[in-house]
Amino acid sequence: MKKFFAGLLVSCFTLNLSATETPYQAAIATAHPYATEAGREILELGGNAFDAAVAISAVLAVVEPYSSGLGGGGFWLLHRQSDQYQVMVDGRETAPESSSKNMYLDRAGNVIPGASINGPLAAAIPGVPAALFYINKHYGRISFADCLAPAIRYAREGFPVTDRYQKLAGYRLDELRRWPATAGIFLQDNDIPEKGHLIIQTDLADTLTRLARDGHTGFYGGPVAETLVKNVQLNRGIWKMRDLLHYRIKERRPVVAQYKRFRLVSAPPPSSGGIVLAQMLNMLERFNLSSFDPVSRKHIIVEVMRRAYRDRAVHLGDPDFVTVPVLRLLDPDYAEGLALSIDLDHATPSKDLSGVVAEENIGEDTTHFSVLDDEGNRVSATLSINLPFGSGFVANGTGILLNNEMDDFAIKPQTPKSYGLVGNEANSVAPGKRPLSSMSPTFLESEDEVAILGTPGGSRIITMVLLGILDFAEGNPPESWVSLPRFHHQYLPDELQFEKDGLTLPEQEQLRAYGHRLNEKNREYGNMQAILWYKPRQLVFAASDPRGEGAADVFDVIEQPRLARESSIP
Ligand code: DON
Image (cartoon, rainbow, N blue to C red; front, side, top):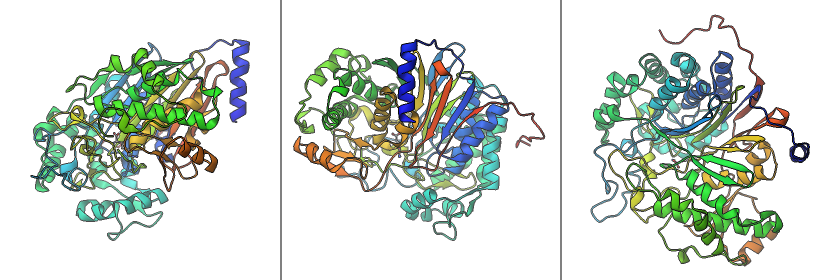
């Protein structure tokens, strides 16, 4: 497959085949087979990629409760083929009005353990429901109720517990047990459910039904909002009705950069993803990577990661609150200077780069999906409730599991958090502010190709996407991008992390000799979902990370008669 695609690229360049602008086939890659099926169902119902994205997001909210949900947030990168319009729909959570910079510190200024991670105080105001309604209203083609119908079905009928569910529930078991409403839904007799056990979410089905019927206000006003606020306040949270009523989606212009033959289109602040990717590619452009042996190549990539993550820690935050020096960070001359500071034979100690500290990642929650419809519309979306099962808190009667995205703020500047990342003032807590994210939904575009990719993985998201991009640039297909062994550097802690068996022993030895401190993770990480449309031959490929339980599908869209397909809305 690998050679096949590389061969195609070469032959098509030499034949100079012209590109056409409609793929004829559609493709979907998501982290769960039910979500992939739901996306297909919506396209076959006459919906476009944006409708499919709404349906997929809603199904993932039901069947991957450890990764994303109505109680969380996300970024949807959209491309509309008819006018080439590109935008990122920012449905990131916002800090409640009563939040404050030092809210997670005790009187002595120390971080209160768990305060930004467990329970409702850790939860920011969710953006997913608003985003789904917004995307359907502004970009969709079929009704919101039709888009939410598959999710409502899965919430009512249930989905079976898998290995992944068991693993992630095990990871958060104490917190799931702590809240009766949570344990009642996600545990079986207060324990990790057996494989195949059906998780039925009747309250969530009712909440989704209300959202489908009443749109934005079905969540952010009325009984759902009131119940959320009441439950949060009863459990030492600080949400107010005003926080929900004021929540708004933001449309953001994506970060765009050129690397070799293709254009990178990725997530702008409040994600750090696009800027860090563009910076790394700008630096790498200064090296002819293919002329280096594999170890030197990895050394250069690691040094580039280190430098871009340093800037992440120093400069990035919510652009509505802080001035992010985007132009300077993306300036080719700046990249040139950083690239020149790379010593080809020695690791640069992070402490020798001025700046602040950077997150360590647990890495399998959060979710990404990629969609291409047969007209060429596309969506790259990464959604999160942060750690597995978010804050662990379900607001009784709503079925909504709240995020713990507040932990993505620099809760104590210069101090590493869940992902070991550091941050400073630019990412401190403030009312209404969006925490800095690493989620990096991405498109790559050349005359002949369109790629759609992204992954969960906290602070490691951006470096996983980088490795996928470099593999794409070498002419390899999505199957290869999603399964590559992964390595990572994030400035601080000053260590080169890699997946179990991700570097060979001789590679490890050589990298150590360069001065890198190695940290082999005892497992794999990430869950990349990717699509490639190769225009000259009208070929579409899709792949789902073998590390996860997802499904990728490439198909002809044959519109199905509506049959007796019932809308779930009474
Ligand atoms: O927005 C972020 O960067 C994080 N909340 C993402 C967390 C994540 O990817 C966790 N899992 N793998």
